[in-house]
Image 1: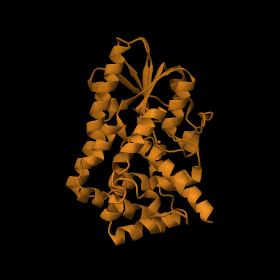
Image 2: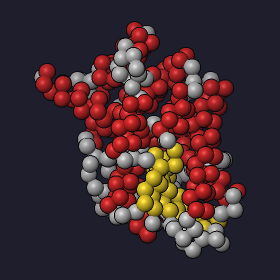
Image 3: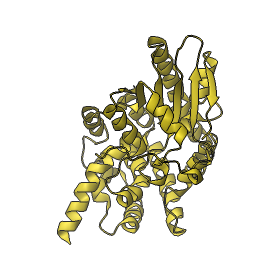
Length: 319
């Protein structure tokens, strides 16, 4: 039993760093055949980007940072758009070197910092949540993480254990693009993403942790998978669902929620739209497949809207 526990702890500790990268909006098998799965998607998060100055269309795709098998069976329109593209850009560069550097930013320099910050009540709540996910899990496996990294990681653990070593959608697409000889890159740096959480005070991060624990405990009490509502929102194909979902998942005081949404989505959307625009201007003859989290395509200030304001013709693509 001790050997099994140590193996699980090792596997989970290594995974938590990688999965957190992709959870930021928080990451080796090849991309599985992406077959049509009509009941999984009403309309995919896919937009075509055109302009008079460009000879090829480019595409915006909304991903979900998950290895859930059904969600990774992408509709034919997404597969075709991806295959014809000359370049693939995700939120982050996902090369091994970049992922290793990113993992280091999630670890606290003081290995006791997290345990010293959490009250006994919070520790008990986290341990109860982890035990329900797997009897061998405990907070000790996560004690190396920063406070905000713990909050981002907790909702993902259940699915990682369920789907084993399968990769999240972002990583699958990134590696398939490399296999196909496409140019690959990222729109942001890990420092820029981590700064979203680093900008909040310790007390604010504790408040966000408490709300995350509330949400996970609620799902567990209902015997509901922790990510179920997130998956349902993604399957809906409606860009506004993630705004409502985040409000439900993080029942924060309004001023804190507004600042969190601004830094997590609005500010980053502006930055990514500017960088997509720069890529399209730099290489007008190339087709880009841009894949970032679906929450970044909200109806107000989504990336597709910001690019439209820059003069691009944006068309929602049907299955």
